[in-house]
Length: 411
Ligand code: SF4
Image (tube, rainbow, N blue to C red):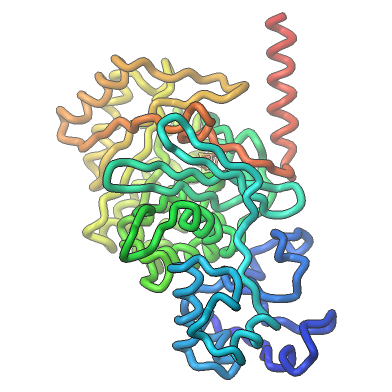
């Protein structure tokens, strides 16, 4: 973790953080778009403590001439007790509290909208700045609760079966905006790490390609797994990627988390049509990266996600091709019945086809599950997430134009 270079003491010497104050750079400064406001805290001169992992907070406190254990005390208040006001931190001395009030704040994303599905799946629309918002989904199951977290506003990768892809891309989320999603859900659920754990798993599977926002995602995942953060076991934090080969290698070097790969097709020709990134990183290269990841983390099982698209990738020969691929890398397959969204060209494979596909894989010894669709009545199911994206890629407009054109032809 980098040391924060600029001292903050002079901020404290002033009557408050005035317009000339030089603040320590937020850890993700290089990864953000400088011209974009981030959230309600962006207008403030204070640093958002949600930006920092444990080491970052210790460094920040060192600059305040405070002992590192004070940083840990504050971290516990934030993630175990969901405190956003320094005044709540009663075992932190008054002098330090006022010091913190002068230079720092704790600002999670603002909830613009929240809704519960009939099956108890819960969805939040969280405002990140002026016109952008992302979706976060909590899926309760017996004995576990999984939160699906977004890493970008929109996504630039344009996978054909994904609603997020149709919205184009605006920017990466900061670490505070990523961990802030977990904060909002944990607070809502009354989650207490190590005691009353409602939130047991996090999947970086919401809007965006997490490996294209590497530093911020890795920092946020470190807070998820830290005992003073949300205290989740390493294997219960999963990063899902469309297959950015060099970044899978980098992830294996720096973070002990689980890996999921959006495969969705068993050969390059088909995969390039469904996941355009395949053109750059074809299946053989992707599996090579998975093999290296598995070699570094022998206890990890890589999950291969495969969305079942009627008449596209669900034929018996596709299942047989997939079996051959799965012989090359230790992993399991998750079959995902396609979740529809407005304007899509795809349909969900029928149940018999999905069961037959699964049987071929199981008979060949490939561990294969069919994912139960959750939250589809509130558009919270896999592939349906759609926040509010101020698109900078013109993809949203193009998608709308195609829908309108289709409607005109149909009329
Ligand atoms: S599936 Fe993931 S990587 Fe592909 S467009 Fe959707 S959000 Fe982006």
